[in-house]
Structure formats: C-alpha cells, structure tokens
Image 1 (cartoon, rainbow, N blue to C red):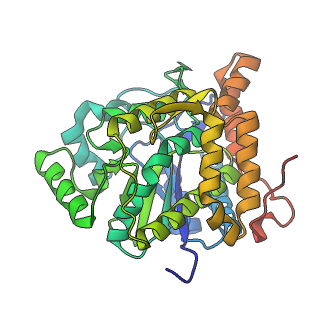
Image 2 (image 1 turned 90 degrees about the vertical axis):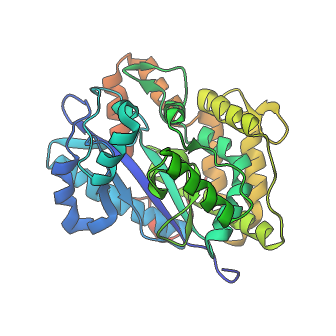
Image 3 (image 1 turned 120 degrees about the vertical axis):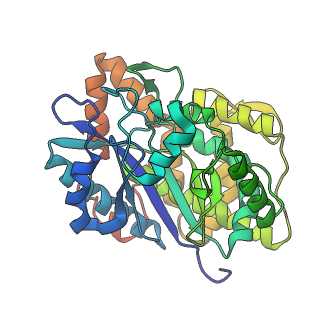
Amino acid sequence: MADHLPTVGVEEEYFLVDASHRAVVAAASRVLPRLKPVVGDLATGEASEYQIEGKTPPCGTLGELLHQLRRVRGAVTSAAADEGLRPVASATPLLGMRTPIPLSTDPHYLAQLQTFRSLYDTFAFCGLHVHVQVPDRDHAVLVSNHLRPWLPTLVALSANSPFWEERDSGYCSWRTLGATRWPVTGPPPYFSSAAHYDALAASLQETGATLGERSLYWDVRPCAHLPTVEIRAMDVTASVEEAAVLAVLVRALVVQALERVRRGDPGPAMDDSLLRAAYWRCARDGLTGHSLDPRTGRLVPARHQVRQLLAYVRPALEEHGELAPVTAVLRQLIAYGGGAERQRSVHAHTGSLLDVVDDLAERTAVHPAPHGLDRGPALPALE
C-alpha cells in the first residue's frame, strides 16, 4: 500500500422509469436478465424493484474509472430501453412511487422487512458508494475517524434529491434525511480499533438493531468481504463525470487518512451532535448558503468547506495527476450548483416534474466521450 495508489471502485443506484409516463416502474427483475450476459455481476438488484445497482471493478486511474462507469451505465441504458424504460440517476424518485414500495425478493431484504417493518415502506433512495483499497480492517476503521469531518461536505457536493412525494422537500438531499429513521445510519461513531468496531457491531446485532454487517448502514464502514473501506454518504449523481471525480476525491481523502494513521494519528475527536447537525445543514442547503464545520461548531460558507477539502487532499491529487480534473469539477459545482440545483432549475423553468425526469434521464444516459476522455484522467477544463 505504501508503494502504489489504492484502487477505487464505485457502486451507483438508478431508478427505472417508464419512457412515456416517466413514473418509476417495478421492473428490475425484467431488466436484470438482459444485463447478465453483458456485464455479469456488475449490475444487481436493490431493495426495491424500482432500482438497479451498477458497479465497477477496482480501478487505478480516473480515466479507467470513468470508462467503467460509462460501460455499466451504457449497458443499463440499453437493457432498460428494451423494456421501454430509462434509468434515472436521482437519489429520490420523482413520479409514481407507491407505498409500501415493491420490495425485491432477495432473502436479505425479506429478512430485514421482518425486523424493520414499515421503515421499508418508503425506502427508495439511490446512493453513490465508493470503495477504496486499504491494507486491512484496522486501517479501514481508523481511516473512518479521519473521514468523519468531511462527510457533510460530501453530502453537499453530491446532493441530488430535492423532490419527494412529487413536491419540493425544501432539502437538497432528502435521501440523507430519509435515512435518519433507521437505527444504524449516518456518520459512524469514533472507533479506537477494529476490535472496538466489531464489539459494537456485535452488540447492535444482539439488540436486533441490525441483522449483521450488511445492515450496518453507517456512511463509512469496512467492507465485510473486500479489503476496502466503503464511503456511503453521497447521493447518486446524474453526471457520470461528477460520479468519477467524486470517487477519486474520496480516494484522495483515504490516502491522506492512511498517511496519518501510519504516523499514529487516531483522527480528530468531534462531538457527535455537531456532526449530525452538520449533516442536516448540508442536506438542507447543499452548496448554497452556509454549512456547519463540525470541527469548530461554526457556520461557514459552503464553498469555503469545499475549498478546505480540496486543500486537504491536494497533495494526494497532485501526486497522482488528478488535481486539475477534480478542481475543474468542484469549481463548476461551486459556480453553478449540483444536482439539486439543476433539478430545481428545470422545474422552475417549465413547472413540470416530467421535464425534470427527462433532464435527469438525459444526463444519466451515456453519450460518446469527448476525444481522449476515456484514455486518461483529464476532464474538460473550466474557464
């Protein structure tokens, strides 16, 4: 690990919508068999029949990750079109969701239904999950301590779920708020070691608050079956370029954290209430207005937090040639807003959620990449 850049992989979830009516459709079990011969296990089902999850293999460079994301999205787009559907990368459904949601027949989700009951009635959210290679479980847990201060900023950068139940929720990331009702979600606790993590996980399972590691829904967690740390705080993004850049930004955070762990730094201790308040503020306002710095308890401009984040990871990004493309996308997000602002802008212009769905579907779809984009890490520079 000391001699090479950790690999990074992405899981992103999409809603399936009717191409004509734009409402979500419980059609995952129809689309997945069409995907199996094309991408194999890189496309799977999710909690609801409204959703499909696309995955990448471990990737070394930004260009490779972008290529793999395009490959999977392209396959999902094609398979969905064969069923008269379109994939939509929004963190909440916009039209047609009925409750209780149509659940997958996966035994994992059916078992959870017996425990969590009506919490599953409205559990229809799409996230962007990033896996970063780490040496072992102990490193994964200590890395989590170092990531905690930056999780609210990741929420703000990716916020892409302003609409819920066919109206504006008033939040930029309603998905973030929707998850807070579950017993083990949101920012992880501060852990002293993997043994500490495992002891708490065992106690939570004994109480019935979880059914094992798969239902530990903290926004950072060691992966149970891979040598990675998984970061789950972000909404899925409509733009594949934003997804790739946010993933390598998260990798840079992990690289910086690993260096501090090697030096014996256990990570900054913060008040958990302040951290949750920072989540709430970033979920409400996204990149607009002010956010709460959980390290100081002070309100600061959201763009200031993004700049602080970029400064923190700059050494890792510079070393691996990723500073320019990451900076370009972050500047664009600060200047023009992210997914939530784009959804609201379309709705304000036309007054129709149908048009918001169309815009999201178009942004989700894979188009031919600009010349050279898939062969290297560079993204188009911004003025």
